Image (tube, rainbow, N blue to C red; front, side, top):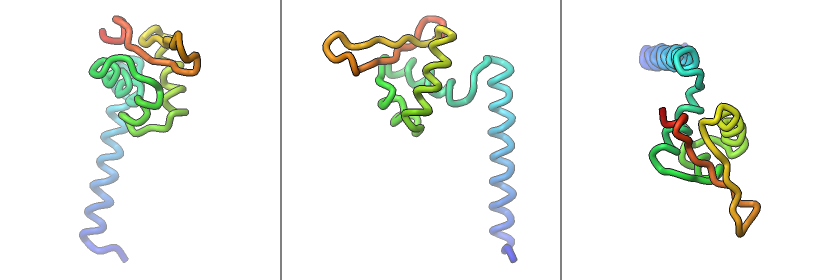
Length: 101
């Protein structure tokens, strides 16, 4: 049997989850972006060019998730990928003017 405190915490968590869901839908409908996509764009806008692993670390997502996000942002020309001339394995991601808008 849950205590009053536990019940209050569960209710608060449900409200937070609902608020996040509503905000995510607002972002998708208004900007055509998911929350994680917007977070990645904001990090790139603030910090400049970063590697996918740096983005992943900054936003607390896996590198695989960030790669998918970057794929979708690049297809919309909101970010660019640039391969290093000295190390072809190294890729940096930069926000475009469209991504800043």
